[in-house]
Image (cartoon, rainbow, N blue to C red; front, top):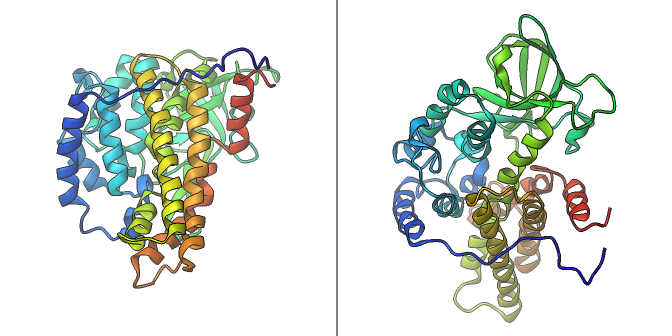
Length: 387
C-alpha cells in the first residue's frame, strides 16, 4: 500500500435535509405513544423485537417502503428521509423485526434485480407491514464466507430443485419469504460466478425451518433445511450466475445503516440516567467518549446513506461502518459493568440491570450478523490494497 496515495474510502460529510427532520418529528411523536408502555429490556432488543401489529401500524402511516415507487406501494421519499425514520425507531427501541429485513434489503434488491411479477407480488405487502422476509446467506461451516456456500439449486423441467441448509436466518420461522443465494454453477472453481439468488416461498413443501434459541432463551435465529424442495423457474432473481454481484449490492444496505451502531442505545440511555446531572469525573469521561464515538459513527453511516441515495454501491465503506459499529455496540455493556459494578440481572427491579442483562447476552452476536469481523476486515484490507 502506497501511503502517499489517498485512501479509497469515499466518505464525505453529509447532513439530513429539512424534509427529513420534519418527518423525524412526526415519527418521534408517533413513537412516544406507541412504545412508552414497552419494558426497557424489551426495547433493548432493538431491531430484533418482533411485533407484526406494530409493523402494520408503521405501514399504515407510510413509514415502510419509503423510497420505493408508488406503483409498488412505496412513497417515493429520499433515502435520507428513511434514514431519519430508522434513527428514531432504533433510538426508541421500537419492535421492528417483522418488517426490518424486507424493508432494508429484500425490497431494494427486488427493485434492482427482480422481475416485474416478483415486485408486484411481494413489494406492496412489505410496504403495508404485512410481509416478512428472512435472509438465506450463511450456511453450516461457511459462516460469512458466501463464496463457499454449498446449498445447490439445479434447474429441471419442473423448476429449481434445492438441497442444502441455511443457518442463522433471523425470523425465518415467522417469515413468508426468503431471499437466498444458492450454487447453480457446475465447476468447482466457480466460487463466485457459480452463485445465483432466489425468491423463496417458505411455505413450499420440502422446506423445514427449525428455530435456534439464543442465550436469552428467545428464538429468532433459525436453521432452514431444503430437502429436495422444488422452486418455480421464475423464482430466480436477476441473471443466473450473477448472485455474487447482486448479494454484494444487498450487503451494502445490510451493513451500513444506523442499526450497526445503535443496537445498544437503550443501555447507553440507562447509563446516562444512572449517572445523573452531576456524574463523577470518571463516569463523565467514559460517557463523553461513548458520545464522541457515537457521533463519529453516525457521520460515517450518514455518508454511506448519501452514497446509496446517489445510486452508488459503497460496499467498502459499509464494511467499515459495520465493523467499527459492532465494536462500539459490544463495548457498551462492558463499560456499563466497569462504571457501576452492577451484575446483569434479568429479573432485577432496577431497569439498568435488566437492560444490561439483555445486552450482555446478545452483544456477542453483533460481530457475527451481517458478516463476521474477520470477513469485514478482509474486505477492508482488499480495498486498501493490503491483500
